[in-house]
Amino acid sequence: MMKITEKSDVYSYGVVLLEVLTGKQPIDPTIPDGLHVVDWVRQKRGLEVLDPTLLSRPESEIEEMIQALGIALLCVNSSPDERPTMRDIAAMLKEIKNEREEYAKFDVLLKGSPANEAKVLATSSSASAMQSFNKSNNTSFSVSSLLHSSSSSKMSFK
Image (cartoon, rainbow, N blue to C red):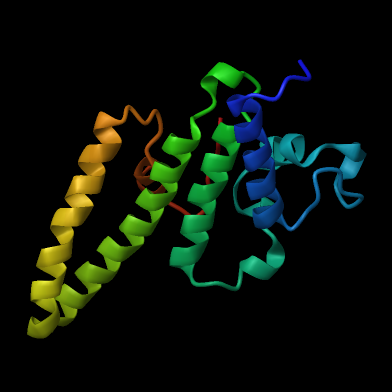
């Protein structure tokens, strides 16, 4: 429509996220058939779109990248009304970070370090507060659903 709106900014942010995650430009000569990076990611889906240099990262980081890929795909939804707000995007990205911190806390608990146990208990209430915020904020997408809906690292986005 050639109008700059919050939803067009969200689309642009999604394209930037895709550039970071794929290592490709919006119009990239390495993408077959002259597809735009958005269309290429929609066709390919999953791990195969991630920049190969990122695949050497630990599995937990790759899962976070896949979650960020899901957020990017929400941002580039062809229907502007279906795109999240920037506030929702920020909440989803924070949720990815909080999930990583929660897994680290559980790892500490499993190792049985009593000194760290109090720290874990003190910070778990802040994670619970963030989850409550996300629910009350009507975020239409749960980042944790991406991680937990996948039984393998390869994911499919619709």
